[in-house]
Length: 175
Image (cartoon, rainbow, N blue to C red; front, side, top):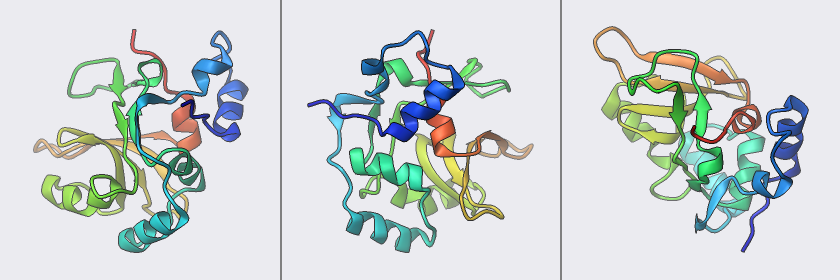
């Protein structure tokens, strides 16, 4: 079964010229095809927004309606980092984008408390040592941030993209 990423994501990627050497077929497969969750329903999305107390970004909702989270295809698993990250790599590895299911973004409040992260976040990827999140601080539509928990000198916190669409458009293959 082939899952197509929405036209919005493709248009962004093409407009930025990031993927001009790649075929459209590769762009259409942000998730590993054998590691997909079924699409999220409107009811599941609404319930998640009620639990989180925040409206999810429309472009993230588009992706949830394609697949309610899943493992990211190796061709789109790296986000270039122009700052120092704990692993020492030049990229942030995005293994999974969580959905609105039980083990997904609904655990944000729990992990925020456990790891001492800022309250204005909704986590959508990562683990205890590093997270990708929607940042709602002073915003109705969140930007995308990277955060490593406080190591005693404060959180390593960086804005990666102004929208989820922009974030997805910058994902590339790990070299």
